[in-house]
Length: 201
Image (tube, rainbow, N blue to C red; front, top):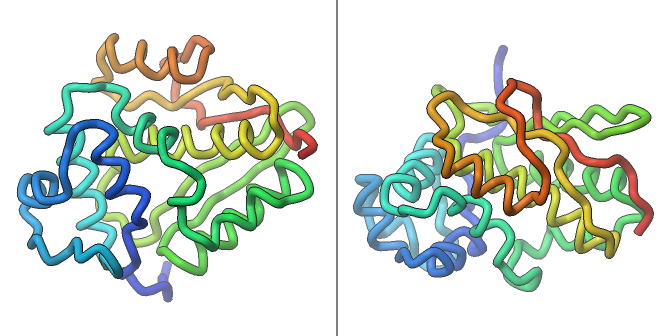
């Protein structure tokens, strides 16, 4: 399949700000990922998919916290998120919010959100169009947490993820960290992240 979306996009400021929340610095993460320090200039911060994955792998290797990805996604003020994502917070309902977020992703990154809504749940699968390897576990965690957080903040209700894909090799402490964040036991099957569908804002 031919992909026409450029493999170059901005690593959002929320990511770099989130590093401080877990005790890391951009310089430390870039060095560990073997990327030039100039990747982070405080403004554009352009990366390729491979570089973005390398950053997330470096976070996982430098941080002792198994919930690091979840914390990066949930401890950032809405005001520090990309301006274009703000449209999702003013959506009519949860389904509309996810649709707006998916549209933003397509415009700003080589990432597609596949959304399947049924009567009881909404299944969301992020797909990196230029990926040559598996998505780093912490990036998967951060994406999952951001979908839940969007639902919680947008609806004013306590949205919970019902299941979570667990990559092979996840330790018990990693599963416990996810469980405490989502407030629901997490299975170790291969189902995709799911959430209650279409709560009204």
